[in-house]
Image 1 (tube, rainbow, N blue to C red):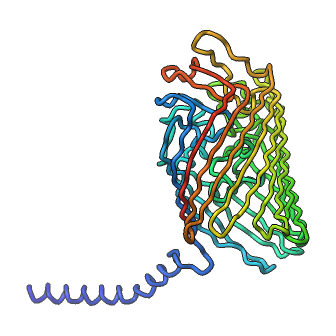
Image 2 (image 1 turned 180 degrees about the vertical axis):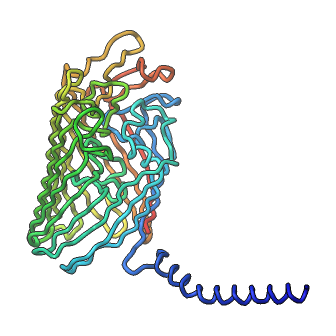
Image 3 (image 1 turned 135 degrees about the vertical axis):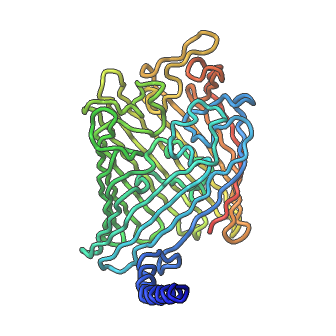
Length: 440
């Protein structure tokens, strides 16, 4: 009996061995065909770590202040150490060849900026406990396609950054640490399709169809939908290559969504009021340009950014608003390691609807602020930034910023965030900050 059992086990082992031997090549092929090679040719990993310190001279130590038009990470009262962002980008870029090809790009940010990029309404109450360096923001994720038509017709399909504005989401790529008033009022990303075509060395254009600004919701116009937006751009480059002029347009079939103010506490805000019934719209024209004069030998740079917008609320509860902004920039590179940049800005709205910093609030002493929609709003801002490139891939910057304007500075009652405010003034609101950036 024991001998028979041993014989049976021996046969089973032999069969199993043959089965494993036969399946090994198939298993090897399966792994080779399905696993993602991290060192795939043409795929590049890049990014940066951006951290620093900021100090706002406005507000109480408990953190109950806000400055109209400022980005959330830049509004914390008193001092704050910041992890602005850890950015990681993975990309397989299209080559310069005019042939059928495809690629992709994905950008992810983690940090305090990600918290406000995901929802710029966060922090509108000005409380410091809105700061969150654990937040995650998907900046871009799109497939890139080139059709060999003419000079090459490129497409992005998915989620991609806005075509509007001189400044970009990445702080280290801008002239200043803090974001401009213009950037804060423009869309930052779209979800849809964007095509681009370079006519020659001097002229290129873009055309796309997307969901409403800064949203992944659907393209219908009723209820809480975001409508559909048409975006277009025409860029002109000087023959000498030292100047650019970009003209950008956006038309949306609904009011703005998640741009600069909240729709939860004040349903009459035009920006964020997407409860319309089909008659709302938003139009934005943005023009920016830069010029590096030849006589300065690439040490001097001038730039401007401007925007004009109008929105129709589309319902009886909302208000219509129009606004305009302008910013001018200068930068001088003294030597290989030191530069100085400055920025001056102006914002005007025919009411408080675009920034919406005081609607619905009463001052704690019982007096009232001017209700939104009854008066214009004017804001000014000036910033100066010093940059030091210590070693390769390491940038250190220090900055001073001044904001002022009608009802530009206000503090909320910490115990009643949607009720009363402690104070309101026209400023000035002063800010100092520094950042350290390592890029890879």
